[in-house]
Length: 72
Image (tube, rainbow, N blue to C red; front, side, top):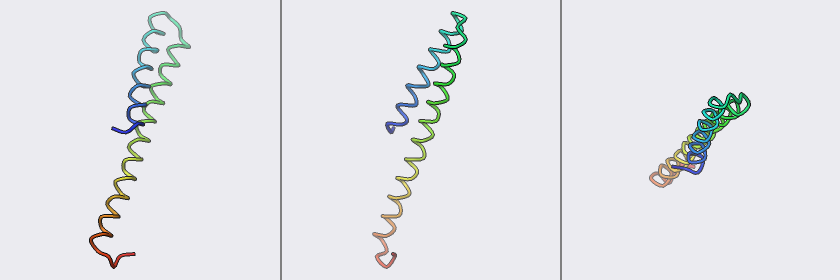
C-alpha cells in the first residue's frame, strides 16, 4: 500500500468522523467539511492507483527490454 493510499484512508476516516460529529451536533459546516475530506481521501487513493499503474508499466517495459536487447 502506497503513501497515497494510506493518506487517503486516513482522510476518508477522519471525514466520516467529522461528518458524524456535524450530524450529531447539527453543525452543517462540520458535516460538509467531513464530506469534503472523504472526497479528498478518495482522490488520494485514486492518485495512488495511478502512481502504482505507472510504476508497474515502467517495470514491465524494463523487463521486456531486458528480455529482448534489440528493442530500443
